[in-house]
Amino acid sequence: MNAKRRETSEPGDETRALLRRLPKMDRLLEAAASVQGAKRVPRSVTARCMREVVDDLRGRILRGWKPKPQELAEEVVLEAAAGCIRRRMRPNLRRTVNATGIIVHTNLGRSLLSRQALDNVQRIAAGYSNLEYDLAAGKRGSRYQAVEEILCEVSGAEASMVVNNNAGAVLLCLDTVARGKEVVVSRGELVEIGGAFRVPDIMSRSGCTLREVGTTNRTHLRDYAGVVGPETGLLLKVHTSNYHVIGFTASVSLQELVTLGAEHGLPVMEDLGSGTFIDFSRYGLAKEPTVQESVATGADLVTFSGDKLLGGPQGGLIVGSKEWIDRIKKNPLTRALRIDKMTLAAMESTLRLYREEEKAVAEIPTLAKLTLPVRDVERRAESLCGRLRSLNDDRISLDIVERPSKAGGGSLPMLNVPSRCVSVVVEGIGAARLEQMLRSAEIPVVGRIEEDVFLMDMRTVQEDELPVIQEAFQRLLQQTEAAS
Image 1: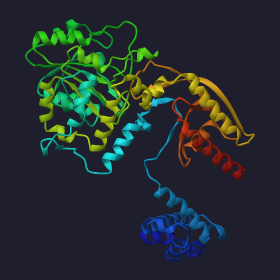
Image 2: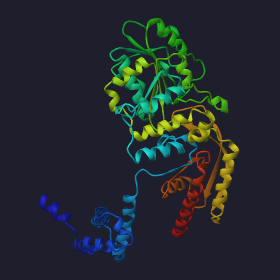
Image 3: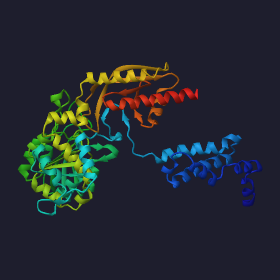
Image 4: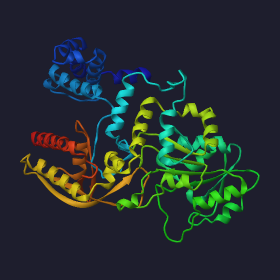
């Protein structure tokens, strides 16, 4: 039976003849070496791509494909391999145009860094620095000194430190303050953040016991007071920065928790999630609790993200009392969660901008995009339409429509920022196909589809990206015209 199965699986004469016509690897590599620019491509990459293309052709033949002679020509294989080489030589992490209208887009890199932060990162990354060296004392120092003073200055806190992200900050605080004890938190504040990470899971990992109080929509101070006992280690408030409960609701303020904590000698912590130093209500946007307000209430610890509304690099910022911050610094987990010199450089420069609110709003891209007047957004939309019309292709139809942008990044969930979008319809290409083709451009352009129309929101598109979008459409139109 096995012999018969092997016999029937062997290729026939015609298939063997087709396999013999496949270009030989040594000849392909020799031909590829003569192509302009080949010296810039490692031979291992060239060989791998050649092998992949030939193996693909071989597999198709064995599955019954009957190619024409020109389909196995050397130049055809070289062209296919060239495409593979371009893909493998291109960085995986690529610049992308965000035309979605989501300002802090988690999947597209969240907040953009300010020019000051970028310049500082370049300076620090290009040379040695006093990362953990005390220049005054001439001995080893702490990397947290780079940002501690300015972070305390801006927030009003006694002490501060920065770790790799806010989930890490929460984990570190809980592990230090309440390991082996109960942490009391409202049931309505047991949030889940992106990637299915949940506050209860972080608590469990930190060795704490979750003690839920209240209900999903209503929690009262008496609920907290009723469970405080010898096993209580911490009163925790979690700001619901990525969703909003409306209707028949009640919640306990941070000030009330601080008062309760003082009565029982318990520390109080607030996780702001996407924290901010700016009162957005002054700019016509929704009010968010600021870090300064939380510190001023007397909370022992306040944690928040660096790369959301703050507009800096990824990081988890911890501010609060010196007593607790000093204990946190001594926790062995701190080393596992520490940030590198480039993050510190970007964070310091970002925080320094907050010394002058007007300067921060103007120069931190996240804040600038949130507060950009809609008339400026409309001008950008008009400019893009002009560029796309200059392509002189009758297949493309353009319009400027009013649609809201969103803050994104798990922040300001109820906020709709007035914006303008360029809607694009290309004859013969559906909205989904158009969206996919623009995502496949050399510099991908990511927009959104509404009512089967492709939209590009100009609030999140930067001025210097308009030529990039124009080129992407030019190539798209050329490709579809050649294929028709």
